[in-house]
Length: 347
Image 1 (cartoon, rainbow, N blue to C red):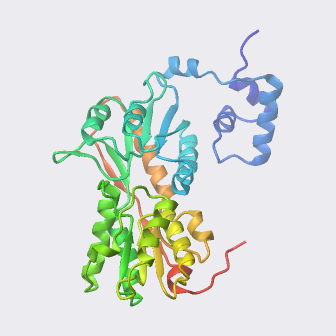
Image 2: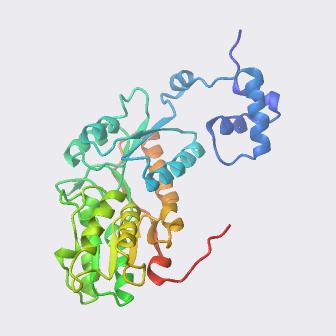
């Protein structure tokens, strides 16, 4: 029996071959009625995509990887949603992997889990060394999310990022502008991860601009950017003597802020009356927390679009391309945790 083709499905559904392709790939720009009609034809005819045939025809599988530390983190789950949509629009399918911040796993996935399957990879690295990534990026299409990688002064891979220093500076300046003078930082990493270093730098810049001194007692160390570490760090802050205890906390992630808010609640401290809280990530968790959390919102849709298009360009290029660094926009959303103004969420 001859294999069912896209044309067979298109004829049965009364649509174009391109429309069938969009539906099969999960592209978002198809009406629900059309999608249902195409999927009914797919089921009736028993159509199955043939990735092997595609690879023989084009030399590419149409599969790309997205490797992130933890999909349970709202930021990365939201980002993965945007990456999938952007990839589908470019006729690409995304294989999503978690590294859990393990350097060995990050390096393994950066190579495409054996490049015979994947055409390229978008990786958000935490602990793999920049020197180890350099030879990978020179041989295999790779886009890194987060802080740019250097060997000496040379950028070693394509990067998509936000300006972490500026983002942290804006959030901290907002707290200082409210008249808060004892501003704590929750997110200082003793291992000096690049994200932590840059957000600490922006925090300290804003303190300097406001005429405030950096107090190490108000920067408790954290091991991970998660709720538990935010809880423990803020419990330590809440237990400080009254003359040192913070009247504002800048958290380096929304998950840290979630833990911080819980610790302040346990200590009987009101938000923002006793302690104003601000963060970075702009996740849905920040919007729906009580009180809603003031947060720097990276444009995750722009990050996804830039990273997928950058990777697709590298995959499809016949000649070597210079590495590029793309900076996505961000904004500060002021909410109840700093201004105390009650808000009703839109339905």
